[in-house]
Amino acid sequence: MNVSGVALTKHAPNRDNAVKLMEFLVSSKAQKMYADVNGEYPVMPDVELSSHLQAWGEFKQDMLNLEEVAKNRAEAIKIADRVGYDA
Image: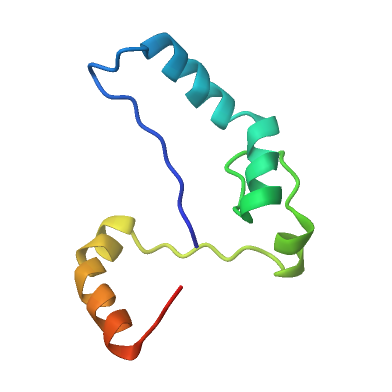
């Protein structure tokens, strides 16, 4: 699963516009766009899943902490390279 995120740095030159963008990205409209175009699950529970995501059935959340996943990232990349995996 892809995980998208956004952050605002302390010294961002256009803080007000950055906040507006962040607010838009978590709006139902933007989340619907992500669901339809990128095939991502929306973070807003009121946003309908795309037909593509609906075809996968009910979402089953993995409770593994992403920090644990990140600890194994370098090794996972090595394995993917070794077996010729090309996303």
